[in-house]
Image 1 (tube, rainbow, N blue to C red):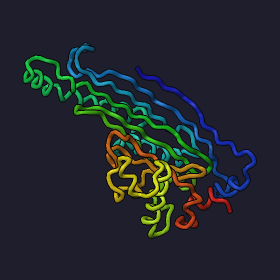
Image 2: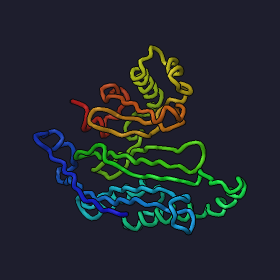
Image 3: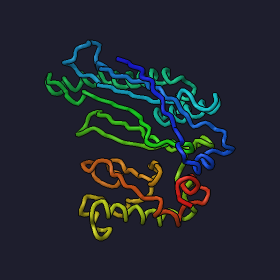
Image 4: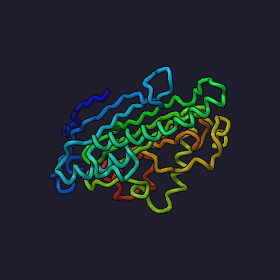
Length: 285
């Protein structure tokens, strides 16, 4: 089943004169972005028989992408960013969004169905019993987290099961400077030498979140080591905070899931670049 859902996001600047003046270089760039979505839900059989009692992959794809923004060149660049971060392969850049989804689904289908020979081998090995680990699933989706005249932050969420003890889940973030149409990294936000002080600020916020008095007490909450907790460039921005996420096994066991931590901009003023997007548009002068 495939559904196309169209919606629009409008950014209305209601009386925020400062952002209106500073949020656009030259003051003439439109902030309106119209989005469309391609949604796919499909059962892909492992074998040629279309029998739901036999293994299949349960696949869900929900790809939101821009269809209208400023001018054709700006739109093409923004679409390129969205497709690159969603599909994770530059080979999709030259495709239309629909072609990209179709190709992504085809490649997944081919990979999954190529396992059919192993299925028969495993079934013979366990004397005709059903090898349950061939029931797969894959879900890939993205969502807008924050948008204003100058910044767009969104997440791509991916989960799957491909055999083994459990499935996997990860979330990755992209932050787009809408003036220059570039993606932002920590180096675009912070002064040289930021790594250690930012690490300390993240650890402090985790201590507050888990209500512990000292950093080493985080180990009792399940974290691997304090040394693992460092800036990882997996962040998104809103009007008040930088939000970091650490995926499963990155700093803690699978059972703890994704670890989220937020640091207020007010705590970052000593390490922010004066010309960073945070300093220009979100810190009070």
